[in-house]
Length: 418
Image (cartoon, rainbow, N blue to C red):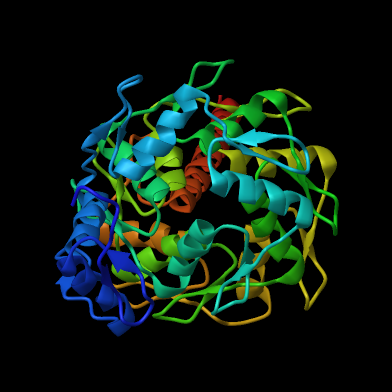
């Protein structure tokens, strides 16, 4: 073994080896025999050494460290490649642009930028790639192969970068901070999106209405308002939605899931917006929405919209039967029940009486629950419904009027007698 002689050769491809045992390991490449399976993801390997290297993806073990900067690597070849960045040894030079590279693979990638050469294509979707590593990474989207698993919660990922991003949810690590407001983020992409709130940059525009957006995802969601595309459907009732988030919120109506709870009264809600809206009922002074015309402030955005229509007199919602117009969609929704149909979808559980509006049912139910919230200042009597109080006031007015008339008539009669 003191010479470079390799006395053992493969019968199939003639590759030579120092030891006979190495031929046995190598020969499995031709037979496709893979006796070493991974106990985490069940992927199989033809050689024990390849399995050991693969297992480091799951354990995140990095036994090889750089003597210069102490950066760690899972494979020795990666360390060797990295070490060239310190030595500045660039032995591969380009014949096109006279540029030098530390690795031959980088030189080949450089050539492809000139030649637009993409020799590697995906067998499933025919998408082309200039690098084999990119093709391998892409192919996992078809096989759903997930090589990288989190050591904390065992969640698996197709790509190492996905695992790294996920792991920060456990460590709460936020290495990326905003230069303007110092807000910190766990991902560089999230920081870039946030930074547009300071610059007001909106690089994505709709080719139908020219509305601009700061995020590509927001543009995609908006564009469905033009196409009426609803790719997300409920498995229970088949109702369709244009956004995945809207489907998730809707699904809670079937599961009765309420993940958001008020830290003041512990009331639970299925939507974050509903919790925020409710929370302002505890803090009555908080009114974040102001009218641009009269500066009146409101605690809820919907209330601001309703108020603003009093300035514009805008009525966008019209009834298809009688063409009556309404400033608000809720007004239009209530209108047909009362005028064009006899439909009364809300019924009282106590007496069975039916109502066209849910609000009327709530008011009616106070009769059964003995909930009396309306107070008469004259006689200190309580009433469950406002109209009952008004009716009571009317009778008091008639009684007072009659009393005044009787008193006045009596006084006149007494004067005549006198």
